[in-house]
Amino acid sequence: MATTKAATTSTQISRGNRTRTVAVSATSPPLPRPGRRYAIGACACLIRGHRYRHPAVDTDRLERLAGPAGAEVFAAIAAGLGGAPLTDDAALRLGTALRRAHPADLVAEALTQAGLRQRAAAKFSRADAMFLTRAGWEQASPEVVARHRAARFPQGRVVDLCCGIGGDLLALAPGREVLAVDLDPVHLWMARHNAAVYGGTVDTLLSDVRDVDLAGADAVFVDPARRTGRGRMRTGESEPPLAWCVGLDVPAIAVKAAPGIDHDTVPAGWELEFVAVGKDLKEAVAWSPALAGARARATILPAGDTLVAADGEPVEVRDPGRYLLDPNPAVTRAGAVEELARRIGAWKIDERIAFLCTDSPVTTPFARTLEVVDSGPWDQKRLPRRLAELDVGAVDIRRRGLAGDVDALHRRLKLRGSRRVTLVMTRVRDRPWGLICTDVA
Ligand SMILES: C[S@@+](CC[C@H](N)C(=O)[O-])C[C@H]1O[C@@H](n2cnc3c(N)ncnc32)[C@H](O)[C@@H]1O
Image (cartoon, helix red, strand yellow):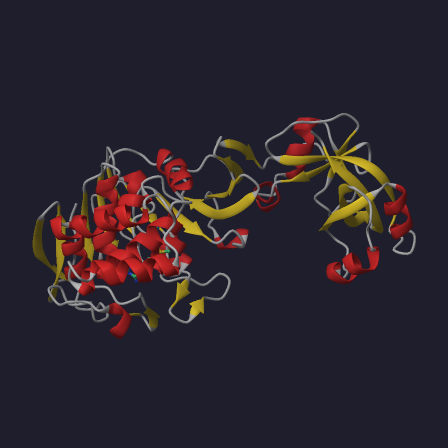
């Protein structure tokens, strides 16, 4: 796979421990210069007008930290903690002690990494051996999502454009020939290290993704940046933009996007997959026709249950029944609520509201099932008395299609009972409606 096109300046491409310099396009914006030390916290790295900042860290220090000197400091931190969490106090205490025997900059960075690893353990099973920046791990795909996505990729030559700290790379790399590209040298260094932690060997290219020659690639994955040093970009904005990503001239493309992505921004023939981990909607992925299997799909991890939005018989609209189903947000975003209703024999309570009902309990990975204890037109005056009659002491309020100040309502309810219920504020055939529900065991 060629790594560059029109040549007037140069950048680094690395495999394993070998690094070579290759040429890049004259039309690219100024690239971070290979060979120089990047104290990014101080200077930041300017990407087409957006600044990306990390706490001060440079690739030279990371190399030392990944070597024998770093291993000693990490071992000393682990011994000092003895299994306890790294709190601010512990970091202060350990920092003072360790600086007596180790270089201060190494100790400071090792403590930073130890803190980041601790927090990233919720996303990565091998966080303890990874190198991270705060912005990098926060934006990284959780391992369970990365593995699901990688399983949909073909074998062969794959390019990870905007690889970040390698959250996706760690799942893509094993068993494939992968080129990882990022404009941020610290992220690129971490991506290569982190892929290796998971058994992958990758080529890395320090470049603006626009300047990468993709000839020979079988597939491309792009996870464009959606935040800058100044915060989140506006909804629908990313760097590079989605329109650029979906226009790439390669046989197969997948682009990670915000879960709020507008379906119309993806070309015809592409699939939009909405991915949730449990009940938390994490992201959307746009799959090009070669990798698509549907118009839209909801996937619930870790089990990988998947529901495809399909055309079919219209779903009946009726008054609520004994059970209320609250579809997973991935299902609602994929527009697959009606398909779910057809599959489980449910009906809708309103033409536009995504709650479903059944008369018998249903167990499905695509919705939470609640038992209806009380149902009627919304009556805020009657509500406190009814909740008291039902011995309710705590409510979770679920609002869909009905406006209202949830905090003010909570205060007005003055609950004293012993049961916990879900209060659903919604519409039934366009009439404001309230349901008091309990979880089905
Ligand atoms: C959302 S993060 C990628 C996260 C990654 N998929 C993961 O799971 O770790 C976006 C990355 O894109 C990089 N980036 C943004 N614009 C770029 C460009 N034009 N060329 C190359 N890299 C870029 C940023 O430096 C950042 O590391």
